[in-house]
Length: 426
Image 1 (cartoon, rainbow, N blue to C red):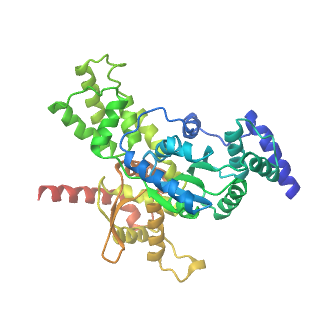
Image 2: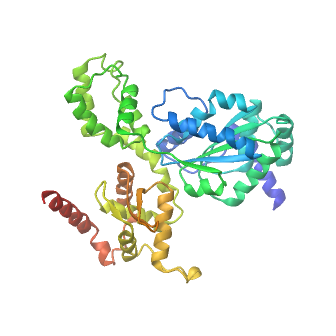
Image 3: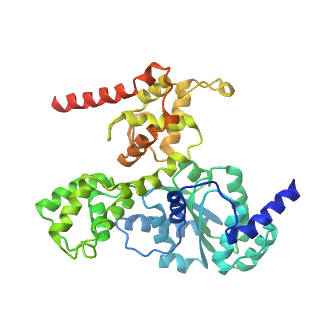
């Protein structure tokens, strides 16, 4: 089996650069999205609203090199929030280039293959393929290249939370270190991944403010000279709500209405288009944004987790969820079942685990705790709510039709909407 595995991997290494590896059937959109997600270290645009976070993380990176042989810092946040952009700002900063002998960027994504990551580290250092199929030989070459040197490594877009794989990679990274004080930055959507890599610090990336989103929108729309009239202010208030603090959305919307290139500076025509977008984001733009954010749901390991997440589509946007109440609804729907291998856990405990998992993937946010430190209420980002609605139309996500609550899904939506309307009238 060992010989067969080595032979298959050798063939993989030889065939992959030539594009000969067969893949599962995918749509053109999925193929395009996969290429877009392949990140590089180049930062070719101006960033808005991350200056303070850059300075804080830079200080942390430099200080940690004096205390640790190899330190890990994690950046966590929902898709589209700017984790990769923040990592690029730090990676390309003069302080980093002056402090470290080598800087290396690796886009990990899926799957997490240790040998592939080591090969990309080699390519980042040497600008060529190693041509080596043996981990031992590759590590030897990397040790030779890194002799007496200190590195700063970015592992962008890490998804896999298998502890054994990370321990294997971590051991290899320690072996190639030429001297102490090396630093690794991991970007991920999962708090579990950030914890698994034993980060000395986990930085939870926050949403941009409404004003920062508006500035980013104007930059992307090439409309920095735009004055703030009452009409513009009204449109701004609608647009920033749709952006929801997510820079990716602000950039996509701004790029859809370029003030100079598409409208030649014609203010009236441009405002007409912006007003149209404010009322209804184009299908193409919305599909692109949602396809990126949807990855967090696609990666959920259990159907039950997807069902619990999708069930939240029954509630209106910006709804203030009561955590305990929602977990009881999950149980009533039959999404949570007793686990025979864990008989000591009641279904409420399992529901609590499901909730924490969804929270760790940034699918829930704005969690409020009571005096005992337990989460009581939370919300969903509007875009995440849109994704839940998209999944709820999928047949596999529907509740069991034999359940009373399953039959009442549409009624629940109506009841909640009526309740909201009555509340607003009062």
